[in-house]
Length: 309
Image (cartoon, rainbow, N blue to C red; front, side, top):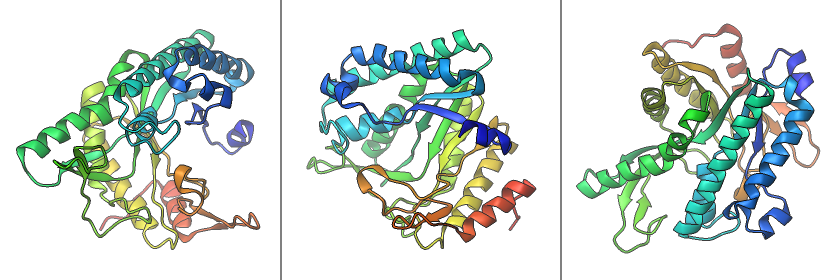
């Protein structure tokens, strides 16, 4: 795959861990067990020795914040431990150790490699402008957006930002929010098939904050929409790239952009029904069909221009 990409003048970015665990790792406690750190580094060393000379860009971990949130706070992903804060913190610390150790390993073998983390970032707004909602947004902004990146600030060569939507945060005194006392109250009628708000301006705010906070090159490693009818994707891409361009004109060092995803994919706990792909996949026949939005995006890539409205 890597050689095929390079033959087509495409630069591969290699992710070493995208949430799944071998059963024997899960059975020993997964990321809650510090043994998993050394196991992961051994795995990474094998990959680096095998294909390392052909890779410049590495992302040891994909969205560790999403993994922690979905597994230990929301309880939707394995090991499905809802609101287990101490377990979440243990897993967080072990993931960060694994990242830092892998960063050092990669640079020991390949000093000129570029290593960073692909990080799920969410723009957040108070659902109503109350003091409590505002304070919750500030707290969640640190926990969800910056704590992971703060912990690896000296061991990342670039920042990978993955952006999909904006959340309106509301205090829930009856403990009936998504995270107990904290609820998400999105009211936008312009949403993806997953019900996520389409709010392009959110990516601009996150890029500006990340640039000011870390002063590192930024790659947008995921940005996309579940849109089975392909009626919103072209506008989604265009409007988000417009916001990215605005950030670039204001001095943010953005080096690249990945649309998620090239093909329709298996979307974790949702299964196969969400359609993120630029290319439609018939799962019965495996036939691939290029969507109209893909052709529009290809034109942006080829011409390196956005139409001005």
